[in-house]
Image (cartoon, rainbow, N blue to C red; front, side):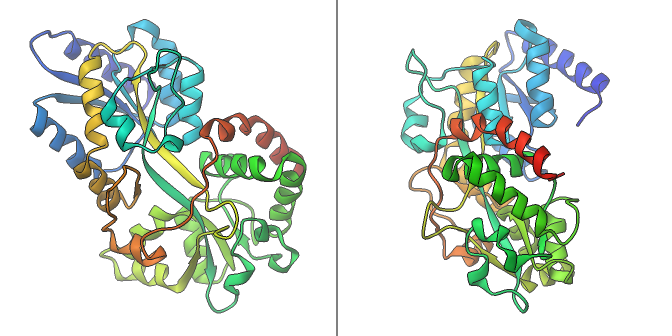
Length: 347
């Protein structure tokens, strides 16, 4: 995350830029920290002539900044990489509902917010990341890890590697599990995860993959785009690590694999709302959706967009059953989840 002074300076510059009535601009607050997205933004400017001024931070920092800036915020579009944070921004009134047939037709209902009273939609998902299980293909049987529930099975004691329970990716997964199992069973499940850990939670998702490949762990939890990135790496050592592990899309016979949503919204006090809607519609276009898939190894969400990423295709054959619970349910469960994590000692 940028230092506060840099963030404040950037916001001031955005405001100054947006003040020019002659220049077509779009002021973007983005939690997408991927260098591959530079082409995405450049292509939008090339197609529309609208210049993008961007401030990068994490999801929490962006939401805090919007609240602090209030009506003076220069932000036009907000891009976040976690479903629960999108929901949080919506309920805190930081987004303005958008009416767009283009977006309504392109984005599936379960991957966007419910329509507001005026018929507009507060935010839209533009890509997803499946939260999958990787395992040691020699020491672990696939059928022993083909559901999230089995991660807590005593047969997997001492095998699990996972990042911090309070990371947004895990909070969203645990919030979804709570919706499926209920709080009592979910807390027992979380306790089972703690009991089965090979080591204390640490590192990011890539570290969990490496832990399984090295033999430190038998099983790990990761988002698919980290694994796909390693499989497509130009570094032979990274490819070798990814190829050592097996991958399971959990719960294909029940509720489906958990997916986290990266999406966007028009800021409540956007100074360039027409440009903002145009940008969101661009993100739903086949060209932009193809970029999410091939540029950053995410699953595209727009209807009728064919997947062409070879690593993602290799994992699933091109498709898998994903859960369809409302994003709002995942968000509302997170306070409960954090309390459960504290009680069971999941750091």
